[in-house]
Amino acid sequence: AEVFEHVWDVPAENLSEAKPEHYVPNGGTAMHDALGYTIQKLYDTATPDDHDTAYLIYVISDGDTNSDKSFAPDVLKEMVDGCQATGRWTFTMMGCPESLKKLAKQTGIPLANMAGWKNAVDVDVKNAFDNQKLRSSKYLRGRASGAMCTSNYASDNSLEFADFTKEAPEILPEEVATQEVEA
Image (tube, rainbow, N blue to C red; front, side):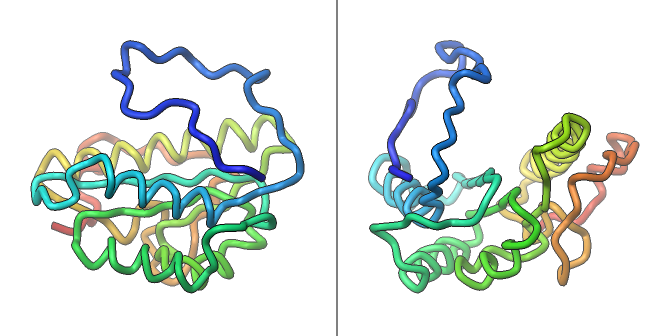
């Protein structure tokens, strides 16, 4: 319900693996505040004017936003739209399937960059993160070939979000590399 930083701008080798006890849900989700805070922080500390820099913002939630205090939906949408207009920002979300269409309208994140998942059953969690890993690989291959953003991170159908509760497909690395990623 409150936005706070765990770490920022720390070399990967200095990080430790998050453990289940690090996750302490409290029933509140300030998703708009967290996303708005992250965008502001990146603009303040990164190099947003460097045209060789691209940003991937990945939101994972098990519920709907319900305790925002700092970023109204229209303000957040304007921020996201402005970032996406540069052609160097990709926003994606893995969340509660029932709220994704509403969140796409509120935030401006393309529906095809969103995926539904559930965390009540271990196999659903495994499938969600296997699918996320596959789609991250697709994104990173696109970045390696010069693409700066994508509007189909999670789904190849621009009108639908992906269902990450399903078992991840077996896709060969060369097939992942040929999927659409915007330059």
